[in-house]
Length: 436
Image (cartoon, rainbow, N blue to C red; front, side):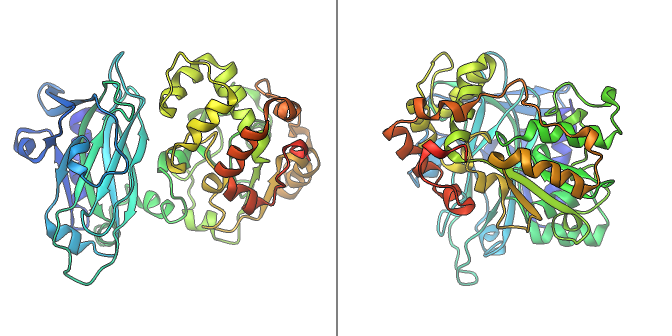
């Protein structure tokens, strides 16, 4: 785990590169920059032998996603009006360093950046782990007349959407103008986040998620986006085996163990994101699945079968970790979330795949996987002996249960939640042919 003092230094450096940004921590000098709303509690303490300040935020009231009274929604800090005018019409990056502490930990915090005049980022839900980690998102500041901003921009953090009194520990935040940052990189020769900045041009979700889903081979020249619940387990095993010439000792027991995978991601590949996602040398592919069977498969695996995942994920849907919701109740909870807050297993595939941001060479269908994947493997130059077509252990056989579990109400909810996927990938609206 990276020491807190080091993370503070990284935040300060992130804000400084390019000459235009702000970092706000819990050091004594920044104490007066934070405001805490009613219904929230803030406790401050020092870590790393006093080298860094940390704050525990506990939120005991429900997050109101519709209000524009931003400072009433949690822990907040405001920036100078000048920052609104400097970033007018430009992209900014917001970074938060936080963790989930102890038994009363929240699984995720919600963060918003608002100009308090012309627009806001919307509440972004940021999953946490037990370790302090930097999480970022990007926001395009609305363009208005030059110099016309008169309000102070604000960042607000809410520790528990459900208002159940759960806590997060926060080291600080930073905000930087990306254009200035990129200019600073070019001018100073700093390279620490060059790929991160490029990745954000192609994906509108957190870089950590992009890195988890991205699988790159410099050897076979492919980029594979592992869309969850769309044959990703079998695909990954084939690609990983090929990458190490069949040496099973070098393939992780779980092909979804990203750190142990022999396949590269953007942070480990020697190629730039532009070469991989736009250039002519790489074959870019993914698979999608009928939204009826995909939603049901996610429910059966993550909510019905896997007790650990159920306890972890239900609170992110506003449900109790001990509940056993019906498929209909699950879908209602998913519908209540913005797509950007959903877990990747039930987010829209349009959002996960991001096909509007770069050109895929091939987008396959789960329903024709047994026919198309062998052809794709040959196209990549991968020996067929590594081909993995058997059903993985956690396969839910969702397609066979569609008729039983998807009634009229479930159908209507799925059509509403995944409307973009039905349109983008041409799936029919009848759940009874979801396996075709």
